[in-house]
Length: 378
Image (cartoon, rainbow, N blue to C red; front, side):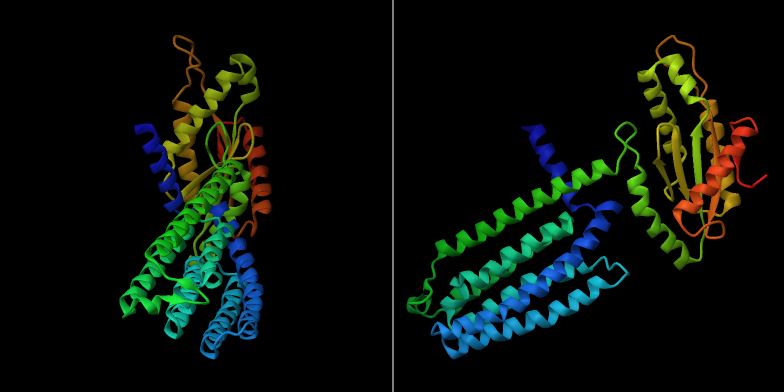
């Protein structure tokens, strides 16, 4: 039971935590997709007042439907314009999800003002809550799903309480068109909202784990090339905004294939984990370590070239000093690396150019005898 509670707490913590860079990028494109779907759905909603009028609905109810549909269409265009902008607004998903939920509550409130059972028993409008929660799955952010579901539950519960409080007689809760408003059917609706929120949250959680696996190296648990491709544009943007510098260090373990042949594949894997442990221990919060290939890594440092060289050189010495023991009693294996540095923006404005420049200096370090860090061309 304790392990199960821990698993549940881990899931909840993962859902409420900020997604990684890949998920944020997926969520940004998902927000644009949601905005486009919202615009299409909003246009279709304009047909509902007409259908209501043709079905014999009252003029007041038809006007409530029409007002809600027009409001949704106006804001749908605003959200679409914001989602299309190149700059990513971190609050956009929360704001647009809050609008989707609140628009449903507003239409239900308008219907309740004209005819109480219409506001509390309208299945078509109430499904707007369901749609708002379902759309959060496209954003790939568990925080937005939980937020939208909780907001829908809170707003609808308040609407129900207000409806029962305003009803001065049981007859006001009975309608030939919408049926009887009872505590039982309102509780059922709230339970359904909670169930849908939970299911969609689990879908988002599963999606996050799959994307996390695609952006994480299985052996070292370091971010991989996919993560780097999504993260580096944001780092470039931050450096431009702050007027700062970035240095990219391409790190390659010296003679690792020979070491792999001498101590075996499994021991070589442990050696890699050992080196990564030292790199992580030495890395500062503003430094990111990525595994590119078998024995090749990239470290991104938010520092100018000179300071970055000193940092990578200190890390190189630390790795060389901490020998790896393949097994108890075995001779320790000395591990070293060579590295080439390249600086943004003066040596390259994109990742591919920086990697090429860093690789050129890495090869220079190998030609000069390995176990060294090169920051300048020969």
